[in-house]
Length: 345
Image 1 (cartoon, rainbow, N blue to C red):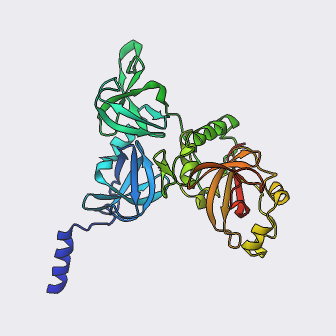
Image 2: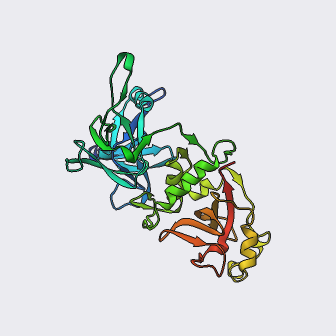
Image 3: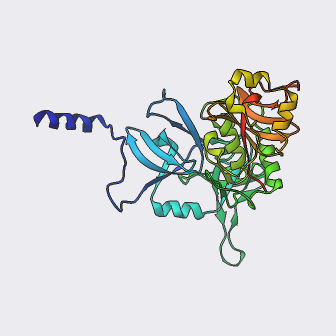
C-alpha cells in the first residue's frame, strides 16, 4: 500500500497528465482556438516527435489532454495530436460560440503579416499563411450599422486572443459559409466548376513549395495537405489524409480490371501510353487521383487532376507531372493509379 501511494505521488509531481480533461458526465468540453499562423501537431508531447499535421489560425479545437506546457487537441480534420499551449487561446464553450458567429476574414496570400499599425514598416505582430482566419474589427452603430475598420489599403483584424493589428486588404476576403465533406459523403450540387477552378488556382500557387510530412500550409505540404489546403482556401473542408479523401465524392473508374492479379513489377512494365490513356479516359479537370499498392489497394498518395493527362501533387515538392508514359515530366509512379473521385457536379 505504501509503495502504491509513493508511485501515485511521484506521478502527480511529475506533471504527466496526458488524459481526458473532462471531469465526468456532463462536464463542459475544454475548447481553444489556434492563435498562430500554423499550429504544429505532433505525435507525442515533444518537439522531436514526428509532425502529424498542421492546423491554421482561427481553427476551433478541443483540448483532451495535458502534459506540462503541451496540450493534446482534437482538430476538425479530424485529427488528435499534441501542440504547445502558446499556439492556443483557451475559451469557454460560450466564448467559442460567440467567436464562431463573429464576421471573419480569410488570408488568401501565400505568406504575409499582421502589423501593429497600418504600415509594413510597423512592428509585426505575427505572420500569416494562406487559409488563416481572423476576426473583422468592426466600428459604428445606429442607423449606419457596423462596418469593417479600413484605412486606405489596410484592414484591421483581431486574433483569437483579442490582439488587433493591420494587414493588406487585397490579401483577405470575407469568410463564407463552409461546406464539409466527410468520408463517404457525396458532394453533388455543392461544388461547381467555378469553385474547382479556384481550387486549382490555389494549388498552382504552391508550385515549388517543399514537401513536408504532415504539412498543410505554404511553409510545407504533403500530398493530402496540398489537396486539403487548396479546397480549404475555397471554403470546402475535406478529411486530412488521402486514405480518407478517397471515400469522398463520386468514385470514378480508373483501375485496370486485372491490376491486383499481377505483381507490381509487371504492372509497371505493361503500363504503356495506350494503357494510361484508357485508365484516365473518365477523368475530368479537378478530380482527385489516388495512388497506392497495386496488390492490396492501400492508398499512399493523392494528386489533383488538371486535364490532358497531367496532375499537380506534392512529391519531393509541389510539382506538375504527366500520367502518360513518354510525355514530358512523366510521373514515375503513374502505374500505381488505382482510384479517383469527383467532388464537383
